[in-house]
Image (cartoon, rainbow, N blue to C red):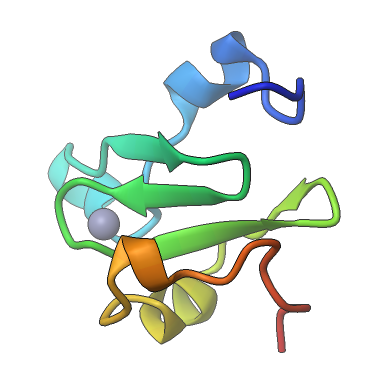
Length: 77
Ligand SMILES: [Zn+2]
């Protein structure tokens, strides 16, 4: 991760909003634009410097291989 879009401190507190209820949901930073839940595979984009931590957004990219994720991500719907 190059940019300071998300500080390490904040990143450590982040978890997938779906999996956090089960005390899971560790996120992996993928490139500069995506966070991937290691539990369910939902993918959360960082759009225009803003982390979009929405379940519907995570769902949208769940089936997309991480190598196929658009960079930068499109505007969230
Ligand atoms: Zn998850």
